[in-house]
Amino acid sequence: MLKGLALTPPVVGRISIGRVVEKNGKRLPEKDDQFTLTTQLQNRDGWILHPLNESLRKAAAGKLRSIPVRLLFNEPDLNLRAEYSLFDRETGRPVCVGNGEQCRRVERDGVVSLPCPSPDGCSFGNSGCKPYGRLNVKIGDDDDLAAFIFRTTSYNSIRTLAARLHYFSAVSGNLLACLSLELKLRGKSTTQSYRSAIYYVDLCIRSGSTLEDVITEARELDARRKGAGFDQAALDVAARMGFSNGAFEDSPEEVAAVVEEFYPDAGTDELEPGDTGKADPINPPALRDKLERKAALLGGAAA
Image (cartoon, rainbow, N blue to C red; front, side):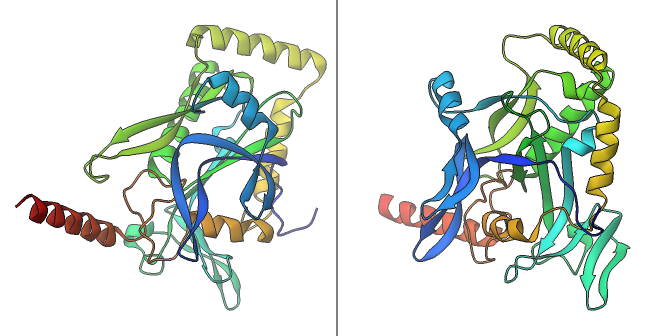
């Protein structure tokens, strides 16, 4: 095994709630109010849609706001990895990654471990460090050991997904990988979003089912898997070792796209696709000023 290379679940597609668009010669993230499933291939128009995107959209009979999924692992933190992350916008490489207690930071002499006070209390990371989560889920039955990945910098999505994973693990007796679940897009308004709708991702039992039914089915599936020799505990151990094998999870090929989509230039006042938990995580005063100017103009027109 190559040391320094994080071994992550094989990814066959992406789940997003936004996209990157070109405006005035710049590529900027743009939010959306529905899911989109893509492959890992891009063309000049952006990410190429995955075949499941169309089939799920037809079944939804409208906007795709829920996706039936299963999880790869029983351990919640293996399915969702969330850290405070700071990227170099020029090179696309991670600079510092921490969990609020300890961080791994790239310095001149290599990667060092340091205390992590979280972005609000860190002078080093106050220029763009924020939570960054990656959720792996299975969609369909083509490959039991491959996944779609959902990336987000939304506090609401990360907090909700983490809570759901730990709750479902607790009530099912640690059978997360056997539960029939669905990703659901939820909306809400806050004072910080100026009453406009913001969207975040939740993890629920599938529509039409009860929690008791889902747990019963999970126990039956777990028994069948054990009877066939499927060792879920060993899979979780292998995944944990793979994640810990590298200092940073995202590969050099991925980080450029991650930075473009989730860590845009500081001058951007757009909402990031995965960061729908705040009105403007990069430059809130610019958005506030923009809205105030708009209100002033409307007030002047009314006068």
